[in-house]
Length: 640
Ligand SMILES: *[C@@H]1O[C@H](CO)[C@@H](O)[C@H](O)[C@H]1NC(C)=O
Ligand SMILES: *[C@@H]1O[C@H](CO)[C@@H](O)[C@H](O)[C@H]1NC(C)=O
Ligand SMILES: *[C@@H]1O[C@H](CO)[C@@H](O)[C@H](O)[C@H]1NC(C)=O
View 1: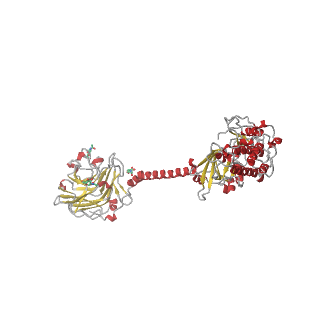
View 2: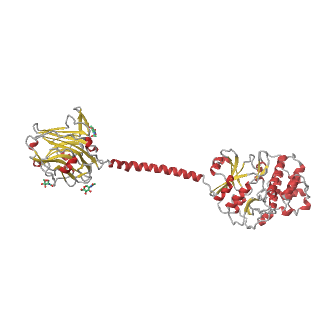
C-alpha cells in the first residue's frame, strides 16, 4: 500500500473533526487552539505478520504560536485504533492518558517529534526525537538533528517552522528500527538519528492503522503540519518530490512581530521627525511672521520683509542698537543683498485700528524727498509691532554733540549750517510739499547728521501711530516739554506755528548748548534766561561756553534773537518757516524784538511734570494754515 501524496490522502485519510486540510492540500493537525488534539490516519488498516517490514517518509513543519515556549509535539503513529477518545492533550500528544501510559495493551508504536521537555517522561530537552512503544517515555531518543558525511552532527530546531523530512524504516528480519531526520531538500542521511532493536510484531496487533497525532496544551500552542507522506509495507517508501509539496502558509506571526514592534517604532520615529520638522517650520514661520493685508499691495516697494530686517540687524542685537526713546528702539542694519545701511525703528503698538490710514501716511511721507529730511525707506508690520526703515545717518543725532560734556563739539560754522538745513527741511514740510506736514517733535535729538554734518530732520509722522489707539477723532503726539508751544498745551492742537515754537527752542539749544529746560538750575527755562540777558543788552553771554569766542557774532546774535522771536508765547507773533529761512539767509532783516513781542512773562511754563509727555494733537490737514480737527483735552502720560 502506498500513499504518495497528501493530496491523495485527502480522500483516504480518516480526518478527525479538528484536523483541517487546507485548500492547497496541506494537512494541519492542530489549528492554534488550546488543549487540542489532532489525529489523521489512513482509512484502512495494514496487515502485519511476524516478519513484516515497512518503510515510511513524511515532511512536517511545526510553527510555534505561543512564544517563547510553544507546544506540544507531534508523532507518527501505528496503532490498533484510529480514535483516541480518552487520550489527553498536552504532553500525551493525544495518544495516551495518565492511567494507560506505558500500558503494554496499548499496542502503539510512535515516533515523537517533541518540542517540550516533559520531566515525567525523562525527556532530554525541548527539541528531541524519540521512539515510543506504548508510552511517552522513549525507548530511544536524541536531540533533533542529522549526520553529514556519516558522523558530523548538525542539529535542527523542530519548531523552526521550516519543513523537515523524517524516514522511519523497520526491518522485520533484523527487528531494527531506524529513524532519520533531515532538513527539506537534503538527501536522506546515511547514518540514522535513532536506531532501536525491537521486534514490533511483539508490540503491534496484526491489523494496525498508520497516521499522525499531535496536541497543544492550555498555554503552549503550535501549529502542526504534514506536507507530504508515503508508506510502503515490505518495501521502500516512495520518495517525496519536495517541489510538488504544498506550500506552508506565510509566516504571519513573524510578520506581525514586524508589524507589532518595528512598524509602530518606525512610524513613531517618523511622527516625531515630522512633528519636529513642523515645530521648526512653525517656529521659523512665527519668528518671521508678518501681517500683510491686501491693501498693502499698493505699497509694494515700501513694504520690507521682516526676515530681511531680522538678518539686516543681526536679529535685533543689542550691539546694533543705535538708540532708544521717542517711539521705540532704533537698530542699525545692513540690508542683505544690496548692503545698503539702514536704521530700523521698532515701534510697538497694540491696535490694528487706523493702521491702514497710518501706513498710507507713512508711505506718503516716504515720498518726501529733501536733503534736510531723513528719508523713510519703508516699513514692515508684525503683530503688535511696526518697523520703520530709515536711511542710516552715520553721525547720529545732534544732541550727542551738545549736551553732557560731549567729546566732539561742533564749531559755529557747523552749527549754523545745521540750523539753516533744519530750517529748510521744516520749511519744505510746511510750505513746499503737496500737503502741510507738521513735524510735532522738533528737538536736537530728532536732528540727524549725515556724513557731511548736514542737519536732517527725522522721526516725523510717528505720532499718528498713537493717534489711532484712542478715539479716531483725537490724535496723540509726543511733545517734549520745553518744545511744546503754550497754546498747544492748552488746546492740544499742533500747528505750523507750534512747530516754529519748537524750532525757536531748538535755535536757543544749539546756540547756547543747553536744553530748553534744565532742572536744578536757578534759571531753569532757557528762553526766559536768554530773554533776560537780551533785556539787559547782554544776549551774547548766552552763547555756548564750549565755543569760546570762536563764532561769527552777527550770525550768533541772529540765531539767539530769532530763537527768542520764535519762542514767543503768542503764535501770531512767531514768523513762518519761510520767513525764518529768509532771516537766516539775511535776505530780510530781523525786526526789532521789542516792537513785536509781548510781555516777557509769557515765556514761562508751569508744568511740573516729566520732561517728556504726550499731548493730544491733530495730524495736519491739507489746508495750509494749520486748522485742525477737534481733539480731546486729555494730557496722557505715556511710558516710553
Ligand atoms: C480550530 O478548529 C475548531 C474546530 O473545527 C474551530 O472551532 C476553531 O475556530 C478553529 N480555530 C482556528 C483558529 O482556526
Ligand atoms: C485512559 O484511557 C483508557 C483507555 O482508552 C480509559 O479506559 C481510561 O478511562 C482513561 N483514563 C482517564 C483518566 O481518562
Ligand atoms: C545545536 O547544538 C548546540 C550544542 O548542543 C546547542 O547549543 C544549540 O542550542 C543547538 N541549536 C539548536 C537550534 O538546537
